[in-house]
Amino acid sequence: MKRLVSFLCISIALAGPAHATGELICETASGAPTTISLGFGHAQVSTGMWASMRVEGHWEKMVVVQSWLDRERLLVDLTDETRDQLFARIDARWNDETHSFDGTLRQGETVRWVRCRG
Image (cartoon, rainbow, N blue to C red; front, top):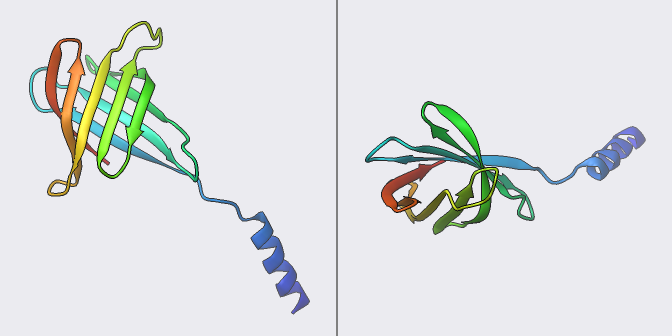
C-alpha cells in the first residue's frame, strides 16, 4: 500500500500541463492557387503562431508579425524573413456551416477569398 501511495504522489508531482499544437490550412479559390499553413500552440498562455506559404510548388517559411485567433475570428499578418514589408494578410470569420474560417487573403493590391480549416 505504501508503494502505491508513493507511486501516486510521485506521478502527480511529475505531471505537468499538456502542450499541444494545432494547424490551419488556408487555401484560395480563385486566381493562382495559394496555400498557407498556420501552426499554433495550445497552452495555458499563448505560445505564438508560425506559418509557411506554398509558392510556385515549394513551401517558404513566413514570419507572423501579428495574429489573433479565437472562436469567431482569425487575423494574421505575414512577412518574409526580411520583415521589410507586409506580404499577406488573412482576415476571416468562423463559419458554423462549413466548420472553417472564411474571409479574405490580401497580397499587395490583390484581395481573394480564402478558407482556413484545421
